[in-house]
Length: 191
Image: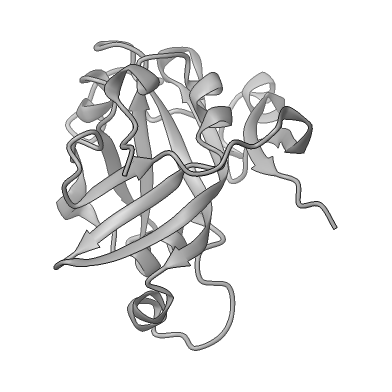
């Protein structure tokens, strides 16, 4: 188990978003480990990014984004879906990376129970990912470098040629330049 250190997160969110691809997201659920390889991410650049929760400054909801890197920023949307983000950069620079999708590796049976699903896509999409991994508001501000409850480990190194980028999803409210910026990253699968 090689848990990603705080120094990894203490960098530009776009770089961290790219380099999280291939890492292993691990959830300790009452002693049972669930894990999946990160395969899709999005970078949010704080107060200079109109798609970011920190665009208008610090609030009670987004305050974790202004804290140290390597912390979980988890929030609820539409009253039913949790979103799991990782704080990046330095304190008071509120950047974060949204984890959009993982490929299940371990604990798939438990994941299906968590999702109440025997078929279908378990973890493609941030809401499904959180439901499947039992990631909720109780993990907001969790230190992802501590190796407790929720963390990220080294797993696979994804070559640059297998990393694609494009515009982020679900940010219709953002300014045009932020809507089209290539801040979403995903893995290309070779046949």
